[in-house]
Figure (cartoon, helix red, strand yellow):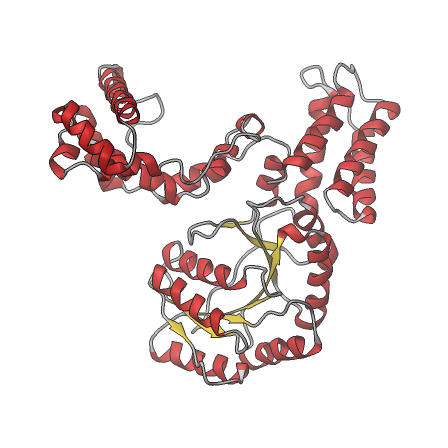
Length: 441
């Protein structure tokens, strides 16, 4: 995500490396490189120029203190201005009502239906709400089927009328259905088109007028860059939407949409989405995104993702097993599943300061754990609970059952033993193996 932009901004800051102070000359060279990086990232030239003019103005008014180099100061100024360009602060999301109504709009292929499922999952699991998904795409039967599949995955009911070709009527009936079943939020997935047309705009505007939604979210494929920004403007002129959703941020995105859209339509980015997993939806925080673009990582989001998967009772049981040196393959598999639920593995690692750049050319697949899981699944329940009983004959059987080589099974068993030894050593440390500051509260 934004790798090319990050590299070019880093190159721009190198203009100030070794400089003792900020001058009009070295600032001009740096600002020029930053503007070029933004334009290459598909940011409109007018926006890029206005952005860099602000940076130049701020930088020339700053005094460099001894502890901070001009390059560090410039990075902070750019980070603050990037965050401001993308909205400044987190935007509120209104899901209060009896029921609250959320209208989803956008072009076909932007990821609307997948986002609708992700939003329902987010509101159900993170906010404790009871959502109803509504299939209002009356042109594409596959969209109705897709929404039903997603609803089944997350345990959320889907309302549809496959034979009805009146989107307004479907939306109104869905709200009645929600009230009768005590659903407190209705998410309406509307029809998309390959391009903007009058019929499409009229239909979604009619649905809006009929249901008076709390939120109207415009879904944008972030890989389409400046085109997405132009489309957003057309939709906003008709719908006056309340917020933007950026999808496919795990793709080869140059960043133009994320950086330009708030400036162009003056509406906040409320969510960002990557991948197909229902858990991969995040609230958009402009400052955190600015930090990630500049290679500073995003520890806050990483911790929040970890906390979301944290189960206190399970953690206590696991701690007892580790203390007794009874950590087994079933426990190991549970930990892997929790990591996978946190999202895309490469994105997670990129949130650690300094790691994103180091792994940018490394292919880290979400399937990285599949081989390990296959080996664990090829063990009997007794073997999983008692790793020490797995002798060479059992290893051969596990290798055959998992489709892995015996050398791979032996290597995995060795790594598991080393991990257990490390846990054992930590138990002997003062404070019961806890690092300072991580005890019970």
